[in-house]
Image (cartoon, rainbow, N blue to C red; front, side, top):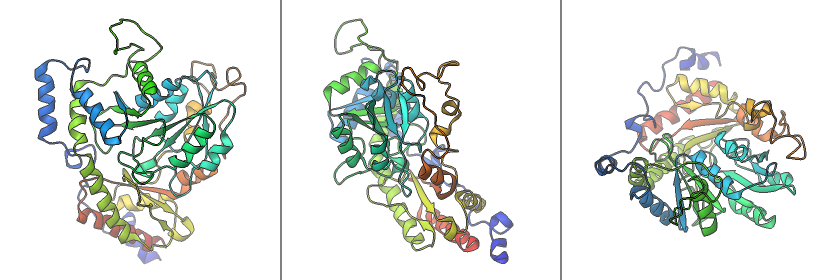
Length: 416
């Protein structure tokens, strides 16, 4: 055992990889080309950088709606903005409840809190990290207004089952698809099309990007108008009225963002297919390793490549594995998030607005909410112990993937 451990780069051995991998923050890990450059030049030449009266954002919205087979897409400034627009379109009363996952970026939670609603956390599936429908059912109450399901890391959440729960209780299902462009939660169905609203991100690290940006899609024309109103200060652009019909934010996307995003959208199918192909290659190389759970490939768009460890069989927790892999030159993360969303200080201390605990205390919630340890034990174990995330990129070559496989097998052999 000692000699095997000594072979790890972590203990002075020769690393598997010394060359850098393509990453989403550099040109080698992105898919920008002449189409994006030409689109940006066209916008600058026109002199119109805002979307009002422009063509690029409107074209992006049409293309995204067509891709997803829905009536409308509404572009906005970020994925968080798209989620806030969705909750804003829901228009909850202060203290109303929205069920969501604790394994998510805090932007999912901000959208709920920003509309004075209360996030209620359901537990997750131990293999995917996505919402567990049975746990969601246990969280339902007379004040529940919506479920926000996250397609984590590109893995399809059980939104078909969650949609049945939502319909049965007369509440909305919102899909957070920030990491899930072209994810397929059911045959012939894309992420974002099963629920009432689907929300996407075009941030730097996503499958395609315009730096920052977001989209909300829906097949409901009433919801679409409410999304547009909320993202444009309540101003009805479908009329000539210079007035404001409802409360809203300024979440408008610029023509520069729209131009880049529209060009990027044309590359999306190839981006996801390349990610899937190399993910299949890695999965085949790692199949059968004791204690190393591989992602279910069906419908996955592989924003990242997750492994779920059984520490007793794999020789250690996610942190131990991540340290060993990084020493081998592999981009790996043992803490997808430092803690479940409900353990973030902003919720742990209950201070959302000034020194008040609004909306988490009675009134308006009619109960006092606190989010202590043990609330979602599966999520807590997943983040603290079992979930190991390998960064993924459409520009990985077969040689890149083979290096990752070699390093994972090397670490497995050493630790076990």
